[in-house]
Image (cartoon, one colour):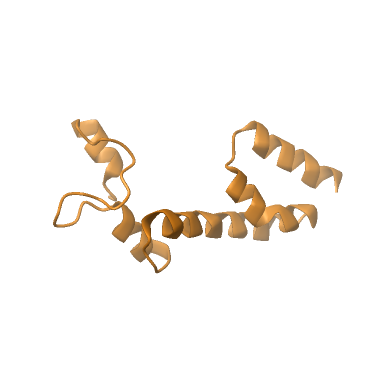
Length: 93
């Protein structure tokens, strides 16, 4: 339990989003670190679905949410993509 508390404190100190911790708290308390990471990753997909209104999972969800597509306007933009560097950040290569 002490180890899980230290890990949780470390993640909080590093600024891990509260939603990620909420998704994997039970696994951290059980010191089940493999499943804690797995649940944390699932929280990212859930957040993408919540924000974008899209469905799906995995690569297809991420591509639908962040790719430029035909309209050149991603559903979720991570920046203003006004510079070449920002456009590169948004691409999924």
